[in-house]
Image 1: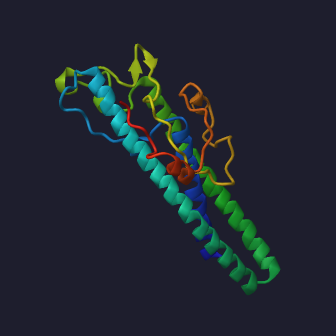
Image 2: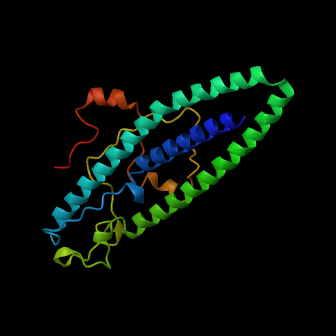
Image 3: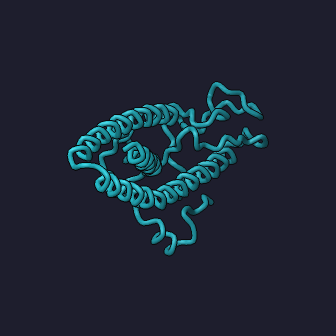
Length: 221
C-alpha cells in the first residue's frame, strides 16, 4: 500500500509541473526560478540594446521550460506503468475489501497532496503575474534600481503600459497531459490575460513543429 502511495505522489506532482509550465509558456511568462539574471554591464543606458538583451535571456528561459516539459512527458508513461504494476500486485496479495479500503485512503491522500501543490503553484503564478504587471521581472531593470550606466528604467513596461512579449517569439509547446483541460487550476484574473499577451494559439506537437522549422524560436532581428 505504501509503495503504491509513493508512486502516485510523483505522478501527480509531475503532471502539475507539466500543466504549470504549459500555462506559463502559453501566456509568455517566465517563473522567477527559471529567469536568467544576467545583467548588461555595458551599454546599460542603450534602450534598444537592453531590450535585445532581455529578449535573448527570455528565449533562454523559454527554451529551458520547453526542454523540461518534454522530459516530464517522457517520464510520465514509466511512472504510470509502475503504478499499474504495483496495483496488480496489491490486488493479487490482498482480499478485495482490503484493496477497496486501501484504494479509498490512497485516493484521499493523493487528492489532498494535489490540492496543496496546486495552491502553492497558484500563489507563485499570481506572484509572477504581479512581476509582469509592474515591470519588475528582472532586478537589474527595476525602476528603483540603479544599474550599471545609471539605468533606472524598467524594460517590463513601456510608456507606463505592460510590454508585449518579444516580437517573433512563438513558443512551441509539447502536448499537455491528456487529463489536463483548457481550464487551468491556475485560472484567475491573471490567467485570462493570455489574449492581451498575444498568445491565442493552441499547443502543437513539439516534434512535428521541429521538423517543419529549424528552431523553436526565431531570433529577433
